[in-house]
Amino acid sequence: MHTIIASTRMRDYITLALFTLVVLTAPLWGKLIGAGYPDLLKKFAIFGLFAVGYNILFGLTGYLSFGHAAFLGVGSYATVWSFKLLSMNVIPAVLFSIVLSGLLAVVIGFLSLRRTGIYFSILTLAFAQMSYNMAYSVLTPITNGETGLRVLRHDPRVLDSLFGVQVEGSPLGGLFGVTLTGYSGFYFCAALLILGFWIALRIFRSPYGLKLLAIKSNQTRMEYTGFNPRPYLLSAFVISGIYAGVAGSLMAIVDPLAGAERMQWTASGEVVLMTILGGLGTLFGPILGAALIKYLENIFSAFNDQTLFQIFDFLPHWLARIMVDITSPFVGDGWHLTLGVLFMAIIIFLPGGLMEGFRHISVRLSRKSGGDADMASLEAAEGESK
Image (tube, rainbow, N blue to C red; front, side, top):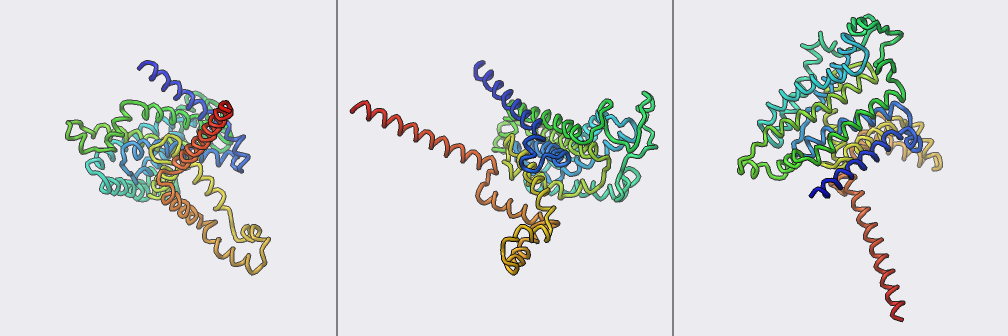
């Protein structure tokens, strides 16, 4: 038993080490696919963290939430207010976002988890839309409405004033004197992504994670045995909401502006797509799905008719015009059509997401290598018999 536990822990450490290596070297391998610049790498890390946290709820318990954009927005607002009132140091900002998003998740989760299935999803969507509309209306003194909340040079920042920290130029988030812009901003986001991945890994491997999976498998049967799933569901909801709040905090750190658009239901729908595309209930799937969607967004949203004409330049002019007319609705502002086609293809052919596809490939390769090995051993045996 101790040997099994030790081997499992060793595998986890190896997994964490490999994941850390891949994340920290992203500026190097990202250049090979045209994604090595800081802004896109930050998106990979931020939305990867968002998806990892969402997967703890949806992937382990099966509870589909359409309200996680509320925590994303609260995390952003908390960070900007921390910058305005306390300090441009990102540590208080992240802690502030954790506290506020966690408290909001407790309230929403406590009320929403009274229902299951589609009713739970509708309740979370309703709470998210209420938060979005309130940010635009009654909470305007806090959120600054549709203009958005931003950091200004004349904000009080009592902690910075207390320690004699001077803000020069445009106020930007920093970590003990290091301004988090460019690659330094990416590595801060990457550090939180690695930490979030490690916490998720420990949850997946723990008895707590197994209880969440059991709830997903058959909640009614667990209730008949006298097990109360509500505290476990609420805790998973709160943990997932905190992940979303930290992701929202990172958005405001790399760009000190918070707007209500981050609380729209489309942001919740996007993280659902990321989780399903990558592989629901897997460790790496949500991160892979987040990176794929943001990478495709970066590529296809930048295309226009002129770019398409350059792509189809090898065709006769009349045929190039037809191809441009066919493909133009799928690029630029309409790139979500491309995402929709990709999503339908994944759901139809790979219901388990990209990770299922990788498993199929690895199984086929192992079978092929095993078959080649068996054939080689058979030929060797025949040679010896001769």
